[in-house]
Image (tube, rainbow, N blue to C red; front, top):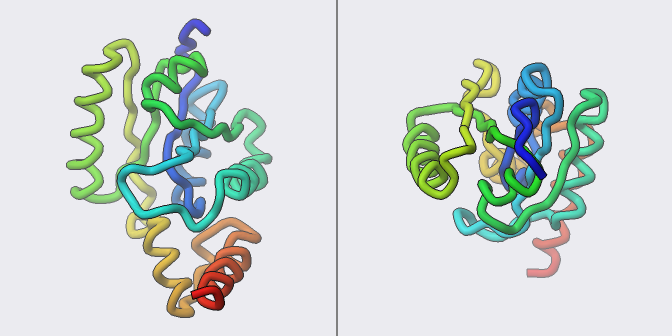
Length: 170
């Protein structure tokens, strides 16, 4: 597929998707004709996912349906290779803090080395989401914290159910 300057990918684990993710995806949907939420099927950076790939895709598709130009797709290759497969010329990522910048700067340099034809654009987190992360949401939920206003409808309940199921198994 030839690259399209109007198509981007927004990669991540989305375990689970948060309202901060939705903010970045929504803003990207205003900048690009098509946004592909690229859901990594296996992370090398963090522990194993709470939710399987099908659940994560379903959460994203439900939460982004109103955008009209967003769809979720799984991937398990280099992000730049996935961008090429999807015909995207841009990767869009959100930045919250200096720690995000350091990691993303390193990834950007590696990605540019592999694929100089694919650019990465960074959108600064909106102030109300500058603290929000999937790992923080999972930690809050693990210890009974209130997360309903941090994630899309239906995600908080499913996360609490999954964490309870895991506690009962262990």
